[in-house]
Length: 314
Length: 297
Image (tube, rainbow over all chains, first blue to last red; front, side, top):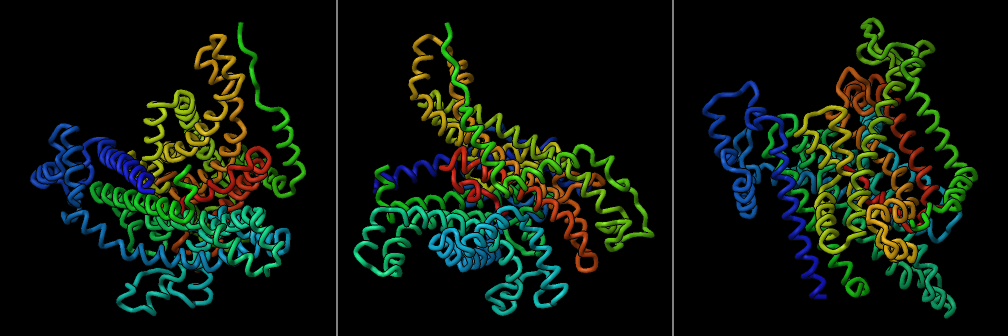
């Protein structure tokens, strides 16, 4: 187990190094001078020179990269071309909004997917099973932003139950936070639920055909005991991975949904940085998200190995 | 003397065609796709009005016989714009998946065939690309290259390359141990010839499945990029862009939100239905990895 953890840790470090290289090269791909492009009509020679020097763009490329890497390791992701504020602070400020949306969406998805996936597998071929399959096919095919627009149309426009957009911090007013998070979380959650339903169903079906399940049934155990003690415990192991990967993707910022619902998270920040050509903020947001994504995947792999010892052997 | 060529299993392809014929959902999906291609090719001629015929006297008109999908905030016919935008979606799907297929298969072939440091290097590069949420990376690429149809296609192609590389590599690893590959090596066939004539045809099944499912995701990604204003630029119509432009009016003009979104949904659903049916026959082990990879961004 220790060797497995160390190997995965080293692999993640190598990938993270590659991620920093990709993120660093993003700025080099900007046609022309990125600082000049970012300043646009606000150009003045003093600001221009200061930003170029601060971003290290007057250095050779290799020096720039190692400097970027060194600063990134100490949590310094540069300063915004627009506001002049540290990128790390700007990105971290947006994390709570994204976190609250992502966690709510995943909880919403689990509430739907767990019972639906389990019942669908237990009653394979039944009406519920067909309904679950239609639901999951619908979920993976529907554009989430379209579902969001339809949600706004129905719940904000026609029924007037929920606000069409906006954000209130959970710590500020939990009730108003709930009313604001409901639509975006339901929109993202429904898509996630459709993916999870498929996984739970196929994972359950796989375990249901195992010999030990047949043995448990042959012993005369009640169906509930067989499902809870033998099927679910094993079937949910791979599902843990998928839930975590989904959560990591959502932490990466559901850009379109955050833009649609004016939700001030990482996704919205990325979009604003693109609009403003604020490349250091764009780089910082992308780097943080990719690092989070890697971290979650590493933790999941370790958790998975703990839950299923066969993984380390493989 | 050349080694006998091992072609893709005709039986598999026949089974796939037969499965499609006998699966009503897959048939429906295929029919929608045929309709879409017809509309995509002949859209500009079939459309009842010009896509940029602005007429402020008829702006935001509800669906009627004259305008079955209503008119937008500039009085343009929504049906005509939805029809012509089909071409954009199909074009983006085909080109971006083509880029991903070409790059991913080439990298996967080399990684799986040569193994060792080549495999390590190439697959670690793919791991790096996998570390980014799909839409976030696409947005970042488009942001630095500049918005537009071509950059959107390149960005989507790049972000879907790793999945093709992984699928290809996995196939190559099992095929290269087969007797017919060793026979080809023993009679002196070159590596490139073995890869092209013996390995590639035998990993076609999972690649066909991956291509059909990736087309759906590519169209969704393009719609998302266009929705963010990073894809097709106005006044050219794109379904995602139409949704973005119409989002401020949806409470007063529901048709601006409903029809372009329904077009994206039907197209993606059709590709998914056909892709799922192909997967069930050609590569049942591939299961739902694709859905897990689908960006919620």
